Length: 316
Image (cartoon, rainbow, N blue to C red; front, side):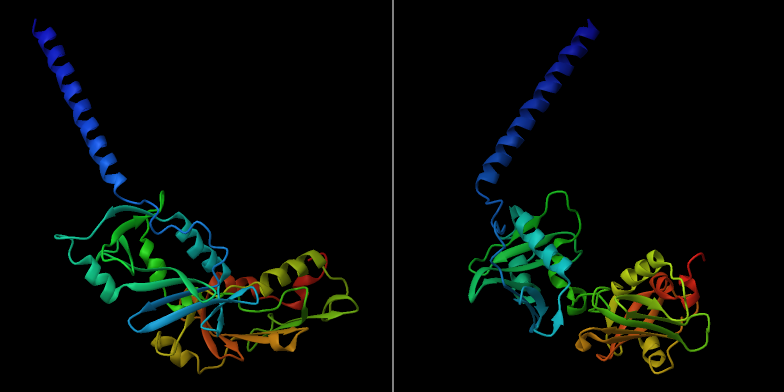
């Protein structure tokens, strides 16, 4: 008897759960009807040729010139970052409205501290909104410039802080490629060391192919692999004077290695100075010439470009 009673109670409990779940689903469905999930989604970004990000009186301008993205008409933009911002805008969805009482003045915070984003097709702004987040950087919000209600936004399957993309510094958007050349336009490459005589390399294009100084029989596969990696070397971070005080004085010292790259186009000639490692630091200070731009490169990347002529001797 008690067993039957327990079964009946269990059935009633399950039914109540089902009814409650149905009510929740109906309520959610009704709420979702009032929210445009794709309020900020851009269906087609192919016509966008300019993007501006404005925050605290400072403005970043990304502009497509000669089919390449530029930052403030000064720096080449990392094409991967350009692709990322478009991927975000074609995937972003709204989850809920975040305006009204009890929401901590989200709209006011976006107007004051948020990033004003504008996408252009020619001279026409086709999408303009504010973007920002909460104090703990766990929730992202967007708000149309023509409205006063912010919305919590997300990308399905993406859990990181979405608004953080729009808050990046100019150095984070820049192309990280150290050299503009490629092995197909490379004229010569020299690697010089101040003290380590084992690191002395000279490769030059002669008689329709690359030659390694003082090496009669070159391991061409090894050499081409080296040229491919070195001409595509990516720096890890651009830095400004005062950003890392310990590096400021180091930048005045003598570099440990100098990598000289000459291109068929002389305007693309570059030098990369690499300074001594500080203790067991896993990164190195570098300087790009002629721009005098200070950079940081991880030690493991530096190790891949350190070589000597004899390393490319066939059979080694």
